[in-house]
Length: 348
Image 1 (tube, one colour):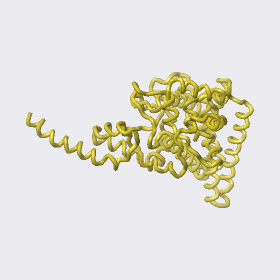
Image 2 (cartoon, rainbow, N blue to C red):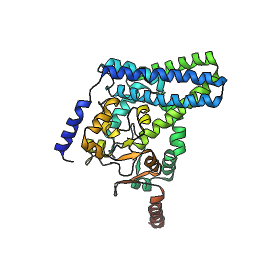
Image 3 (cartoon, rainbow, N blue to C red):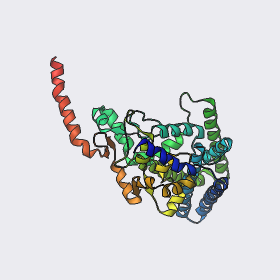
Image 4 (cartoon, rainbow, N blue to C red):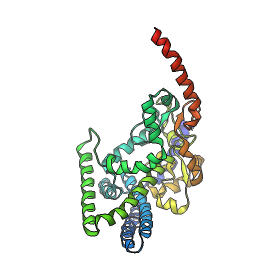
């Protein structure tokens, strides 16, 4: 895509990067109150059936994901026009979703600025190793990476790590505003937990809250994972990296059923979001349908997205993701070469 076409593409999407205060307020009303209602129903259902309670918690988790999209838009300053209001709503939704607003806003902005850039990986993204990096890595590094990319670890233990560790502590070198925001959100969560445990008991609280956090966390990680980890995703070194190509070719269009699209705040139109982060979630579909070039983005469905589980390493030569199994023979050849060269080195 030429620079002229890229400029035209961004120009075509620009009209949708506008906030509609009324729509934003309606979205708050149809997202946050239902979450609290479902939380209360989950608690009340314990007197009927623990499974009914868990069902209510699972539905409530969907509204936590939707709340996170509001949190996400506030971080991009796209939910409200007023920066202060975005910060306030972002902090409140940060308490509900258990994410530190200012800290996450910084790491996520870096993710947008470096997505698909092989030379600038490591902040706000999924850990991706190239085939050559994996082959040349030490045994311990390979073990770490294989554990990280294991579905049980990523989607099972991942939410626990996010909620209990990563989101609870400030990064080294964080500015005072970022530190204070993390402390405020942590303090608010502790106070809310303490009050709820005092009111309903710790057993009932855990039965209701743990499924919500686990399901919401797993779904959130899955959405983030699948929207960049598809077979022909875009990755380039700094010298060749291009922002527009990274947005359109390195982010998928996750075509979901309408009810799931609503619950996930249309984040499936991820290519549109990466092209123009200031487009609020409720305008993403409009931008996609009115801009023909964007409709050529890689489209994945619920079924086809499951294949991405086996995409573990990025093959720079063939510009595609591969599984560990696919590079097994190359790894054996590399180890064989090392074994052959090792005696020679000892002789020298």
